[in-house]
Image (cartoon, rainbow over all chains, first blue to last red; front, side):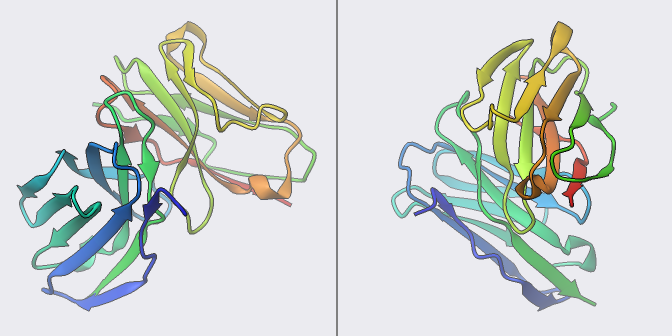
Length: 111
Length: 112
């Protein structure tokens, strides 16, 4: 069993839709949770950074962490064609711990 | 602020040949990472440096991969000899306090 599971998709939605991306994990020691966005032929770009449980909002993006269920989510409101990319969840146990990535979910937002 | 610089962007080699990748991190970032990203997968950590010392190289195939970070700034990753399964994107990242990683655009390696 992988430490971090993420549905690879692809996920296709119309412009303006609310997008929900999810990851599950098995290591209860994970405390730091991140979402990265990766455009084709580019390196991952940090979108959201969350410590422990709860919600964090940044513009159209909301990250949720449910440690009791070992489940994290990223919501994108009013999705735009420019949001079309691969979204990677990542997590680590301590501040100096190794960052473990999910497989990534490919999202396409159609105009 | 300049980002993480990597070169070359693309490299095509035949199996059993050697190849080297170069990375220049963001100025002031003490921690440098090399990740391998196989098509359709998330990045996997190969090696992590703190200044010029190795913090974690547990997933580095040491029989063929080597990395160094002289003077605690630039870094090179070498593969010798390359295998077909080494075809991947090699990503370099850096961070200031090991919290938020900033990635370069990567080197896409094709081993034929």
